[in-house]
Length: 320
Image 1 (cartoon, rainbow, N blue to C red):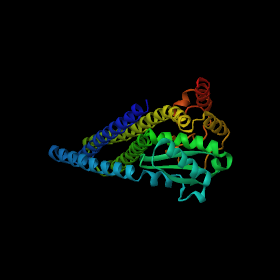
Image 2: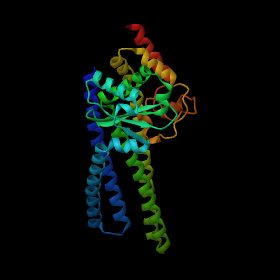
Image 3: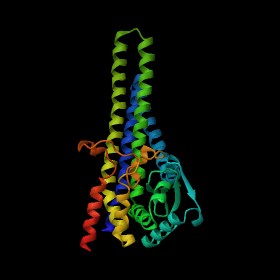
Image 4: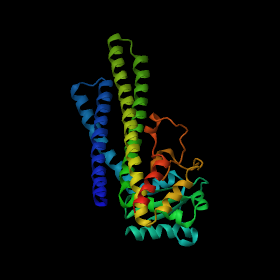
């Protein structure tokens, strides 16, 4: 079961990267066509512009992925104001929980971070078990005893062991880039509309420029739609992985009460101030508490309801 999950996540990572490169490169080619057609070049010039745009998009995309994967810990921790601790003396309970769970999971000791925020929460990140990190808030350490902290860290260690953090990093990168591409297309199209419509008095040229402007705006909207779909897919994957990580915590701690008590304690948490919304799905519970109770709005939730998670764990407990 575990090895199947790990293999599945590895395949998902590779598949997401390939789709990511192909889709973004397609957008690059469309942008190249739009720029070439809008500049008044002939068909040969337009083709050359498309080829150049595809090549540059591919190179930039590969560099972007490499940076996100190699620097994912530093990027995510900086986004959430995490401060690394280097020894047990700085946070004995957290350090020992991470160390114990790493031993139980037979994994290298992750880097350990603390986030100064009164809301109890924790998350994990990294591109592999050998390059991973776990962060916890001061609110969590102040609220929970060592066994509850261990249950939370067991949950996060399961994400690392199952390579969920690797898939999540690629998903965040994909969503962010599509959002950036949409904004970029919108800006260059808006600029083109001002320059072309403002300076050209020929009606036919105005009509052709108008078509290009509409196409450019359509591409911008399409990229935003892709960003939204990527986000929804990321949320759906995240919700399923939370159930598996809860079960993984039980497997590592050998005590379902630890994670059950921890999740119950998180029911009435306040929203975090330090958390970046782009990394919501990384946390054990949503750092920004939802303000809705509608079923359709649950599509946008990064986590399954706490009551359902606790209910599943309770069933596991009584089946033992």
